Image (cartoon, rainbow, N blue to C red; front, side):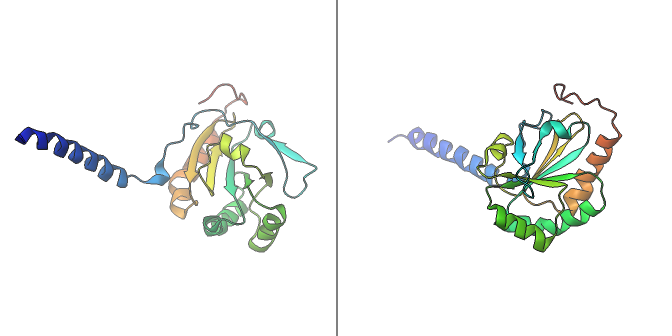
Length: 187
């Protein structure tokens, strides 16, 4: 065999190893969301505390708000929960919970034991709204502006650093904006 017959496969192997090494150095929590800068998907779901009442995206237009996707079976949700409870006490913005693929009794018990940071929590028992929002897994948190446009997505638990360095400065900026409630025009 000639020498070049070994060089081509060896070169292809080296390229594949390079892609593998580059991929291993990526942070999966920094996967960009295609929804950033786009209107939040429409939804209307029953409230966890009163299934006879529902909340939809349109009621939230005109204010900056956060959507936290959580579940009682989620270990990482328990990790971020005390931080969300403390943040909610400060009344910076309303936090709405999207209880994802959970049993209502388990979710209500979880909030009763650990505290309830949510203005309201809505139930997404089949996960369809979560799919519309591009949820990879719980927890995930979205910041939505006054026009209903998603401006930030936190994949995984909210950390003190993410809250202080990314979320709170963005919330202050968004609250200062005097944007009209027009969901059709993204930022």
